[in-house]
Length: 385
Image (cartoon, rainbow, N blue to C red; front, top):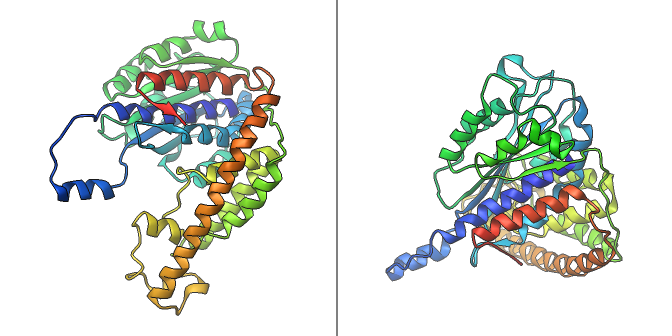
Protein backbone atom coordinates (compact mmCIF):
# COMPACT_ATOMS: atom_id res chain seq x y z
CA UNK A 1 0.00 0.00 0.00
CA UNK A 2 2.89 2.36 0.75
CA UNK A 3 4.29 1.96 -2.68
CA UNK A 4 0.89 2.01 -4.27
CA UNK A 5 -0.03 5.30 -2.73
CA UNK A 6 3.26 6.81 -3.68
CA UNK A 7 2.86 5.72 -7.28
CA UNK A 8 -0.54 7.28 -7.46
CA UNK A 9 0.66 10.57 -6.13
CA UNK A 10 3.57 10.73 -8.48
CA UNK A 11 1.26 10.11 -11.40
CA UNK A 12 -0.94 12.88 -10.24
CA UNK A 13 1.85 15.35 -10.63
CA UNK A 14 2.44 14.15 -14.12
CA UNK A 15 -1.15 14.61 -15.06
CA UNK A 16 -1.23 18.21 -13.99
CA UNK A 17 1.88 18.97 -15.90
CA UNK A 18 0.40 17.63 -19.08
CA UNK A 19 -1.72 20.69 -19.44
CA UNK A 20 1.25 23.02 -19.70
CA UNK A 21 1.60 22.34 -23.39
CA UNK A 22 -1.92 23.05 -24.39
CA UNK A 23 -2.08 26.82 -24.14
CA UNK A 24 0.82 28.32 -25.95
CA UNK A 25 -1.26 30.22 -28.49
CA UNK A 26 -0.54 33.88 -29.14
CA UNK A 27 -3.45 36.12 -28.26
CA UNK A 28 -4.00 39.86 -28.43
CA UNK A 29 -5.18 40.96 -25.02
CA UNK A 30 -6.18 44.40 -23.75
CA UNK A 31 -4.23 45.89 -20.86
CA UNK A 32 -7.14 45.35 -18.46
CA UNK A 33 -7.33 41.69 -19.50
CA UNK A 34 -3.60 41.24 -18.97
CA UNK A 35 -3.97 42.61 -15.46
CA UNK A 36 -6.83 40.21 -14.73
CA UNK A 37 -4.84 37.28 -16.05
CA UNK A 38 -1.87 38.25 -13.91
CA UNK A 39 -3.92 38.13 -10.72
CA UNK A 40 -5.93 35.04 -11.62
CA UNK A 41 -4.77 31.92 -9.73
CA UNK A 42 -3.47 28.95 -11.64
CA UNK A 43 -6.45 26.80 -12.63
CA UNK A 44 -4.45 23.85 -13.90
CA UNK A 45 -4.81 20.65 -11.89
CA UNK A 46 -3.22 17.28 -11.48
CA UNK A 47 -6.07 15.04 -10.40
CA UNK A 48 -5.20 11.65 -8.97
CA UNK A 49 -7.61 9.01 -7.74
CA UNK A 50 -6.05 6.27 -5.60
CA UNK A 51 -7.99 3.02 -5.52
CA UNK A 52 -6.54 0.82 -2.78
CA UNK A 53 -7.31 -2.81 -2.08
CA UNK A 54 -7.89 -3.11 1.68
CA UNK A 55 -8.41 -6.86 1.88
CA UNK A 56 -6.44 -8.87 4.44
CA UNK A 57 -3.37 -9.40 2.26
CA UNK A 58 -2.82 -5.68 1.78
CA UNK A 59 -1.53 -4.61 5.20
CA UNK A 60 1.95 -4.13 3.77
CA UNK A 61 0.63 -2.00 0.91
CA UNK A 62 -1.24 0.36 3.22
CA UNK A 63 1.79 0.61 5.48
CA UNK A 64 3.97 1.59 2.52
CA UNK A 65 1.45 4.23 1.45
CA UNK A 66 1.54 5.82 4.89
CA UNK A 67 5.32 5.81 4.98
CA UNK A 68 5.84 7.13 1.46
CA UNK A 69 3.05 9.73 1.15
CA UNK A 70 5.35 12.69 1.73
CA UNK A 71 7.99 11.37 -0.67
CA UNK A 72 5.35 11.38 -3.36
CA UNK A 73 4.03 14.84 -2.54
CA UNK A 74 7.56 16.23 -2.55
CA UNK A 75 8.35 14.70 -5.92
CA UNK A 76 5.19 16.26 -7.35
CA UNK A 77 5.99 19.65 -5.87
CA UNK A 78 9.09 19.93 -8.07
CA UNK A 79 7.12 19.55 -11.29
CA UNK A 80 6.56 22.51 -13.59
CA UNK A 81 4.54 23.14 -16.70
CA UNK A 82 6.23 26.00 -18.45
CA UNK A 83 6.60 28.65 -15.74
CA UNK A 84 3.64 27.41 -13.70
CA UNK A 85 3.27 24.81 -11.00
CA UNK A 86 -0.02 22.90 -11.23
CA UNK A 87 -2.39 22.45 -8.33
CA UNK A 88 -2.80 18.96 -6.89
CA UNK A 89 -6.00 17.15 -5.96
CA UNK A 90 -6.12 13.60 -4.61
CA UNK A 91 -9.10 11.30 -4.10
CA UNK A 92 -9.00 8.06 -2.15
CA UNK A 93 -11.09 4.88 -2.48
CA UNK A 94 -10.86 1.55 -0.71
CA UNK A 95 -12.25 -1.67 -2.15
CA UNK A 96 -12.20 -5.42 -1.49
CA UNK A 97 -13.02 -5.10 2.22
CA UNK A 98 -15.81 -7.26 3.75
CA UNK A 99 -16.83 -4.43 6.05
CA UNK A 100 -17.94 -2.41 3.03
CA UNK A 101 -21.46 -2.57 1.55
CA UNK A 102 -21.74 -5.66 -0.68
CA UNK A 103 -24.56 -4.11 -2.74
CA UNK A 104 -22.11 -1.35 -3.75
CA UNK A 105 -19.35 -3.80 -4.65
CA UNK A 106 -17.41 -3.59 -1.36
CA UNK A 107 -16.31 -0.08 -2.39
CA UNK A 108 -16.09 3.13 -0.35
CA UNK A 109 -15.17 6.65 -1.32
CA UNK A 110 -12.85 7.62 1.53
CA UNK A 111 -12.17 11.11 0.22
CA UNK A 112 -13.38 13.03 -2.83
CA UNK A 113 -10.87 15.18 -4.72
CA UNK A 114 -9.08 17.32 -2.13
CA UNK A 115 -6.02 19.56 -1.97
CA UNK A 116 -5.92 19.30 1.85
CA UNK A 117 -2.80 17.21 2.48
CA UNK A 118 -3.57 16.85 6.18
CA UNK A 119 -6.99 15.37 5.40
CA UNK A 120 -5.43 13.00 2.88
CA UNK A 121 -2.89 11.85 5.46
CA UNK A 122 -5.60 11.45 8.11
CA UNK A 123 -7.79 9.28 5.88
CA UNK A 124 -4.87 7.18 4.74
CA UNK A 125 -3.93 6.45 8.35
CA UNK A 126 -7.54 5.48 9.09
CA UNK A 127 -7.56 2.57 6.61
CA UNK A 128 -7.69 -0.97 7.98
CA UNK A 129 -7.83 -4.32 6.20
CA UNK A 130 -10.36 -7.14 6.14
CA UNK A 131 -10.97 -10.02 3.71
CA UNK A 132 -13.27 -9.35 0.79
CA UNK A 133 -14.11 -9.47 -2.91
CA UNK A 134 -12.03 -7.25 -5.15
CA UNK A 135 -13.88 -5.79 -8.12
CA UNK A 136 -11.43 -3.69 -10.13
CA UNK A 137 -13.76 -2.76 -12.98
CA UNK A 138 -16.47 -1.64 -10.58
CA UNK A 139 -14.22 0.53 -8.39
CA UNK A 140 -12.79 2.22 -11.50
CA UNK A 141 -16.28 2.91 -12.84
CA UNK A 142 -17.43 4.15 -9.44
CA UNK A 143 -14.58 6.68 -9.30
CA UNK A 144 -15.44 7.84 -12.83
CA UNK A 145 -19.08 8.36 -11.85
CA UNK A 146 -18.63 9.96 -8.44
CA UNK A 147 -15.63 12.24 -8.79
CA UNK A 148 -15.64 15.70 -10.35
CA UNK A 149 -12.98 15.20 -13.01
CA UNK A 150 -13.79 18.49 -14.72
CA UNK A 151 -13.71 19.34 -18.40
CA UNK A 152 -10.41 21.23 -18.60
CA UNK A 153 -8.38 19.56 -21.35
CA UNK A 154 -5.21 20.88 -19.73
CA UNK A 155 -5.72 18.94 -16.51
CA UNK A 156 -3.76 15.77 -15.95
CA UNK A 157 -6.22 13.07 -14.82
CA UNK A 158 -4.93 9.80 -13.39
CA UNK A 159 -6.27 6.71 -11.69
CA UNK A 160 -3.96 4.44 -9.70
CA UNK A 161 -5.39 1.11 -8.72
CA UNK A 162 -3.49 -1.40 -6.56
CA UNK A 163 -4.39 -4.98 -5.61
CA UNK A 164 -3.53 -8.65 -6.06
CA UNK A 165 -6.62 -10.46 -7.36
CA UNK A 166 -7.57 -10.99 -11.03
CA UNK A 167 -8.54 -7.71 -12.72
CA UNK A 168 -11.54 -9.45 -14.27
CA UNK A 169 -13.59 -10.02 -11.09
CA UNK A 170 -17.00 -8.42 -10.56
CA UNK A 171 -20.04 -7.52 -12.61
CA UNK A 172 -18.49 -4.45 -14.28
CA UNK A 173 -16.17 -5.36 -17.15
CA UNK A 174 -12.84 -3.57 -16.72
CA UNK A 175 -12.66 -3.05 -20.49
CA UNK A 176 -15.91 -1.06 -20.41
CA UNK A 177 -14.67 0.98 -17.46
CA UNK A 178 -11.40 1.65 -19.29
CA UNK A 179 -13.27 2.80 -22.40
CA UNK A 180 -15.27 5.24 -20.26
CA UNK A 181 -12.05 6.52 -18.67
CA UNK A 182 -10.47 7.06 -22.08
CA UNK A 183 -13.48 9.11 -23.20
CA UNK A 184 -12.87 11.43 -20.23
CA UNK A 185 -9.14 11.67 -20.97
CA UNK A 186 -8.32 9.75 -17.77
CA UNK A 187 -5.31 7.43 -17.67
CA UNK A 188 -5.46 4.24 -15.60
CA UNK A 189 -2.23 2.99 -14.02
CA UNK A 190 -2.23 -0.44 -12.40
CA UNK A 191 -0.08 -1.75 -9.55
CA UNK A 192 -0.12 -5.49 -9.03
CA UNK A 193 1.03 -6.60 -5.60
CA UNK A 194 2.92 -9.75 -6.46
CA UNK A 195 4.80 -11.45 -9.28
CA UNK A 196 5.13 -9.38 -12.47
CA UNK A 197 4.09 -12.22 -14.81
CA UNK A 198 1.20 -13.21 -12.58
CA UNK A 199 -0.10 -9.67 -12.86
CA UNK A 200 0.05 -9.93 -16.63
CA UNK A 201 -1.81 -13.26 -16.69
CA UNK A 202 -4.51 -11.82 -14.42
CA UNK A 203 -5.04 -8.84 -16.79
CA UNK A 204 -3.54 -6.01 -14.71
CA UNK A 205 -1.25 -5.04 -17.55
CA UNK A 206 -4.13 -5.06 -20.01
CA UNK A 207 -6.09 -2.84 -17.61
CA UNK A 208 -3.37 -0.21 -17.88
CA UNK A 209 -2.65 -0.50 -21.60
CA UNK A 210 -6.26 0.21 -22.61
CA UNK A 211 -5.76 3.85 -21.61
CA UNK A 212 -2.01 3.93 -22.36
CA UNK A 213 -1.21 3.86 -18.66
CA UNK A 214 1.64 2.10 -16.85
CA UNK A 215 1.58 -1.39 -15.36
CA UNK A 216 3.80 -2.07 -12.33
CA UNK A 217 4.33 -5.03 -10.04
CA UNK A 218 5.60 -4.53 -6.49
CA UNK A 219 6.38 -6.46 -3.35
CA UNK A 220 3.83 -4.87 -1.03
CA UNK A 221 5.51 -6.34 2.05
CA UNK A 222 8.86 -4.71 1.38
CA UNK A 223 9.86 -2.37 4.18
CA UNK A 224 10.37 1.30 3.33
CA UNK A 225 13.95 2.40 3.94
CA UNK A 226 14.46 5.90 5.34
CA UNK A 227 17.95 7.39 5.26
CA UNK A 228 18.80 9.78 8.09
CA UNK A 229 20.86 12.87 7.31
CA UNK A 230 22.85 15.44 9.35
CA UNK A 231 20.24 18.06 8.42
CA UNK A 232 17.19 16.29 9.86
CA UNK A 233 17.25 17.81 13.35
CA UNK A 234 17.52 21.36 12.01
CA UNK A 235 14.63 20.78 9.61
CA UNK A 236 12.44 19.43 12.42
CA UNK A 237 13.23 22.47 14.58
CA UNK A 238 12.13 24.64 11.68
CA UNK A 239 8.90 22.62 11.50
CA UNK A 240 8.07 23.67 15.06
CA UNK A 241 8.69 27.30 14.13
CA UNK A 242 6.65 26.87 10.94
CA UNK A 243 3.62 25.63 12.89
CA UNK A 244 3.68 28.82 14.97
CA UNK A 245 3.06 30.91 11.84
CA UNK A 246 -0.43 29.43 11.38
CA UNK A 247 -3.32 31.62 12.48
CA UNK A 248 -6.47 29.56 12.96
CA UNK A 249 -9.77 31.28 12.12
CA UNK A 250 -13.42 30.33 11.68
CA UNK A 251 -15.41 27.45 13.11
CA UNK A 252 -12.94 24.74 12.13
CA UNK A 253 -9.68 26.59 12.74
CA UNK A 254 -8.70 25.03 16.06
CA UNK A 255 -9.74 21.53 14.98
CA UNK A 256 -7.70 21.77 11.77
CA UNK A 257 -4.69 23.09 13.62
CA UNK A 258 -4.94 20.05 15.92
CA UNK A 259 -5.16 17.82 12.82
CA UNK A 260 -1.95 19.39 11.49
CA UNK A 261 -0.17 18.43 14.72
CA UNK A 262 -1.69 14.94 14.60
CA UNK A 263 -0.35 14.31 11.09
CA UNK A 264 3.07 15.56 12.20
CA UNK A 265 2.93 12.84 14.85
CA UNK A 266 1.74 10.19 12.37
CA UNK A 267 4.70 10.98 10.12
CA UNK A 268 7.20 10.90 12.97
CA UNK A 269 5.70 7.59 14.13
CA UNK A 270 7.45 5.91 11.18
CA UNK A 271 10.81 7.58 11.54
CA UNK A 272 12.53 10.92 12.00
CA UNK A 273 13.31 10.90 8.28
CA UNK A 274 9.62 10.55 7.43
CA UNK A 275 8.78 13.51 9.67
CA UNK A 276 11.45 15.48 7.82
CA UNK A 277 9.82 14.65 4.48
CA UNK A 278 6.47 15.89 5.75
CA UNK A 279 8.13 19.12 6.88
CA UNK A 280 9.55 19.54 3.38
CA UNK A 281 6.04 19.05 1.96
CA UNK A 282 4.78 21.78 4.29
CA UNK A 283 7.32 24.17 2.78
CA UNK A 284 6.01 23.59 -0.76
CA UNK A 285 3.28 25.33 -2.78
CA UNK A 286 1.11 22.21 -2.50
CA UNK A 287 0.56 22.66 1.23
CA UNK A 288 -2.11 25.35 1.53
CA UNK A 289 -4.76 25.72 4.24
CA UNK A 290 -6.95 28.62 3.22
CA UNK A 291 -10.04 27.06 4.84
CA UNK A 292 -8.65 27.53 8.37
CA UNK A 293 -5.37 29.47 8.28
CA UNK A 294 -5.74 33.26 8.01
CA UNK A 295 -2.32 33.69 6.39
CA UNK A 296 -3.13 31.39 3.46
CA UNK A 297 -6.72 32.68 3.31
CA UNK A 298 -5.58 36.28 2.86
CA UNK A 299 -2.82 35.37 0.40
CA UNK A 300 -5.23 33.32 -1.73
CA UNK A 301 -7.98 35.97 -1.41
CA UNK A 302 -10.30 33.59 0.41
CA UNK A 303 -10.84 36.11 3.20
CA UNK A 304 -11.06 39.90 3.25
CA UNK A 305 -9.84 41.13 6.65
CA UNK A 306 -12.07 44.20 6.34
CA UNK A 307 -15.09 41.89 6.28
CA UNK A 308 -14.09 39.24 8.83
CA UNK A 309 -16.07 39.25 12.08
CA UNK A 310 -14.50 39.30 15.53
CA UNK A 311 -16.13 35.94 16.36
CA UNK A 312 -14.15 34.23 13.59
CA UNK A 313 -10.80 35.43 14.89
CA UNK A 314 -8.46 33.55 17.24
CA UNK A 315 -8.14 34.79 20.82
CA UNK A 316 -4.95 36.75 20.14
CA UNK A 317 -6.71 38.87 17.49
CA UNK A 318 -10.07 39.48 19.14
CA UNK A 319 -10.73 43.16 19.79
CA UNK A 320 -7.91 44.25 17.46
CA UNK A 321 -8.40 46.90 14.78
CA UNK A 322 -8.41 45.87 11.11
CA UNK A 323 -5.05 47.57 10.71
CA UNK A 324 -3.57 45.60 13.62
CA UNK A 325 -4.94 42.33 12.22
CA UNK A 326 -3.45 43.05 8.79
CA UNK A 327 -0.09 43.84 10.36
CA UNK A 328 -0.16 40.63 12.43
CA UNK A 329 -1.05 38.44 9.44
CA UNK A 330 1.58 40.12 7.28
CA UNK A 331 4.24 39.50 9.92
CA UNK A 332 3.29 35.81 10.16
CA UNK A 333 3.36 35.52 6.37
CA UNK A 334 6.89 36.92 6.17
CA UNK A 335 8.04 34.65 8.99
CA UNK A 336 6.58 31.64 7.20
CA UNK A 337 8.24 32.50 3.91
CA UNK A 338 11.61 32.86 5.65
CA UNK A 339 11.22 29.53 7.46
CA UNK A 340 10.06 27.71 4.33
CA UNK A 341 13.03 29.01 2.37
CA UNK A 342 15.39 27.76 5.10
CA UNK A 343 13.71 24.34 4.98
CA UNK A 344 14.17 24.23 1.21
CA UNK A 345 17.85 25.16 1.51
CA UNK A 346 18.47 22.43 4.07
CA UNK A 347 16.46 19.95 2.05
CA UNK A 348 18.66 20.52 -0.99
CA UNK A 349 21.64 19.52 1.15
CA UNK A 350 19.67 16.60 2.57
CA UNK A 351 18.78 15.32 -0.91
CA UNK A 352 22.43 15.40 -1.97
CA UNK A 353 23.41 13.48 1.18
CA UNK A 354 20.67 10.86 0.74
CA UNK A 355 21.56 10.37 -2.93
CA UNK A 356 25.17 9.60 -2.00
CA UNK A 357 24.18 7.12 0.69
CA UNK A 358 21.20 5.50 -0.99
CA UNK A 359 21.65 1.94 -2.17
CA UNK A 360 20.37 1.02 -5.61
CA UNK A 361 16.67 0.10 -5.63
CA UNK A 362 16.28 0.87 -1.92
CA UNK A 363 12.54 1.29 -2.47
CA UNK A 364 11.69 -0.64 -5.63
CA UNK A 365 8.20 0.74 -6.05
CA UNK A 366 9.19 4.32 -5.38
CA UNK A 367 11.95 4.16 -7.98
CA UNK A 368 9.68 2.52 -10.55
CA UNK A 369 6.95 5.10 -9.98
CA UNK A 370 9.26 8.07 -10.19
CA UNK A 371 10.75 6.81 -13.43
CA UNK A 372 7.33 6.15 -14.96
CA UNK A 373 5.96 9.53 -13.95
CA UNK A 374 8.86 11.48 -15.33
CA UNK A 375 8.81 9.59 -18.60
CA UNK A 376 5.09 10.30 -18.99
CA UNK A 377 5.55 13.93 -18.01
CA UNK A 378 8.27 14.35 -20.59
CA UNK A 379 5.76 13.64 -23.34
CA UNK A 380 3.70 16.53 -22.03
CA UNK A 381 6.71 18.89 -21.89
CA UNK A 382 6.84 18.88 -18.09
CA UNK A 383 10.08 19.58 -16.32
CA UNK A 384 11.39 19.08 -12.79
CA UNK A 385 13.25 21.69 -10.77
